[in-house]
Amino acid sequence: MAGSSEEAPDHGRGVVIMDDWPGYDLNLFTYPQHYYGDLEYVLIPHGIIVDRTERLAKDIVKDIGYCDIMVLCVLKGGYKFCADLVEHLKNISRNSDRFISMKVDFIRLKSYKNVLIVEDVVGTGRTMKALLSSIEKYKPNMVKVASLLVKRTPRSGGFRPDYAGFEIPNLFVVGYALDYNEYFRDLNHICVINEKGKEKYRV
Ligand code: IMP
Ligand code: MG
Image 1 (cartoon, rainbow, N blue to C red):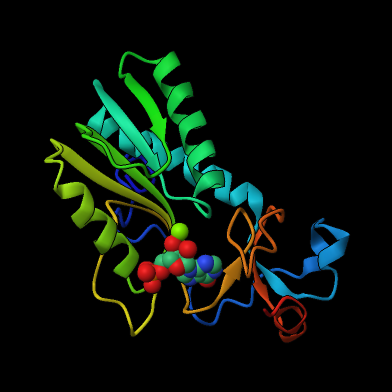
Image 2 (image 1 turned 90 degrees about the vertical axis):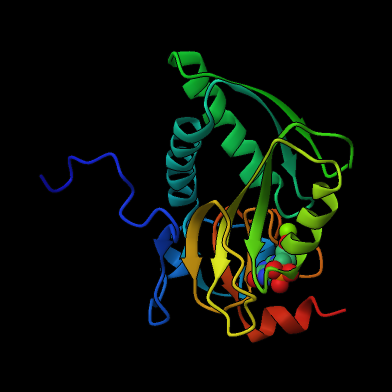
């Protein structure tokens, strides 16, 4: 029956945001006054990010529950997603018999056994490939990658995370810890920056 299945409709891609998605008008939400005039629109509101993250946590527990994992947060952009994902994993773990025991670290290479890498966005995939190859040297039992966003870009090398929150158009996005020259990490929603914003915070 439609809607009764626990299977994600497309486990690999996450929520797919199409190229013609106009986003939400900024005035429908609240955001810091110091960014007034610098943004184009809201691509993904904060509440939807958190709701999607809750489901990713459920998928992760279903796949790799009953083990000790090292959650490896890729700084700085991954910190919000990582913190929210870990909160949801803890909630599930506390309230069910499928539990995960977790330690959290911030990209510091040591010998890890079961690793969940938590990243903000996969673009070309080059950053993640380089990170995975440096982790492989330590011969972990298991390495999984969770990325909040995956961009549809012609420059993609084809890397796909094991868990993807949203597949987005080839746009530069900010907010929810993603930055433009260190700005906009303090914005809750994931937004598209406008020309004025780019100019204002250009280095
Ligand atoms: P990749 O190596 O092309 O996959 O790029 C991934 C890295 O670039 C991410 O870890 C981010 O730090 C950064 N990045 C890529 N796209 C964006 C964006 O739209 N906003 C903010 N940072 C980005
Ligand atoms: Mg990153």
